[in-house]
Amino acid sequence: MSTKSKVWFITGTSRGFGRIWAEAALLRGDRVAATARNIETLTPLVDQYGDRVLPLALDVTDRASAKSAIDAAVAHFGRLDVVVNNAGYGLFGMVEEVSEPEARDQFETNFFGALWVTQAALPHLRAQGSGHIIQVSSIGGVTAFPFFGIYNASKWALEGMSQALAAEVMDFSIKVTLVEPMPYATDWSGPSARKAEAISDYDHVRAGILQMFGKMPSGDPQDSVLSLLKLVDADNPPLRVFFGRGALEVIEAEYFSRISDWKRS
Image (cartoon, rainbow, N blue to C red; front, side, top):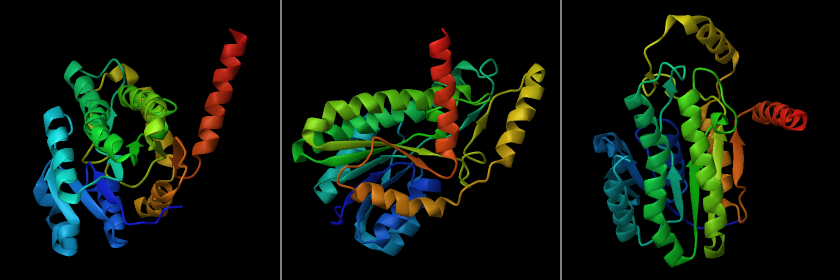
């Protein structure tokens, strides 16, 4: 297990997982290129940790901006050890309810944003012959729930791309891990979320799924820190890892259902 000081590049560090993980990395002595749409939200990090933080304004949906931010981080710190594609948001809406702009915007951030940052980082990681790309997926990237169809689709796309990527970059000693969290008490379902205009015919479906999620315990985001640090320090990290309780049981039931369907077909 490697515990050498690392250089991180983290998207979406204004709040939520991104901010908590950036603070955890800095607290243990690592250096962080912290990105956010509004760079002013990163001022407290700079005030506390000084030149171990490089604050960068980044809209991940802008491919050129992603490349500029990655290049600036490498120019400043000399290398990148951990690239965390954390920026993303939830879109609430039945498949029929979601508008074209809402669907496209969801993919632009959750999938293409991660793709652009990954593509920008890979030449540097290949040149140094090392690196670890952390893709923040979701339990909704392994299964799918009513009312979250387009969000699920964006995370399924991220999962497929990342699994292929892991095989492509293995010979360059670059590692890829998909982090698949259960619900946590971040603002994913609050200020960060977007909601499609409701169609009343789906109200009973909506009520049922909201009731189900309401009964699920939300994890404390701080509890994810030790798991993440263990992951980035591992010599042979897994391709996929669940964060939060109950995920394995959910996915075991999902895959049992799939296998049963395939056998029956």
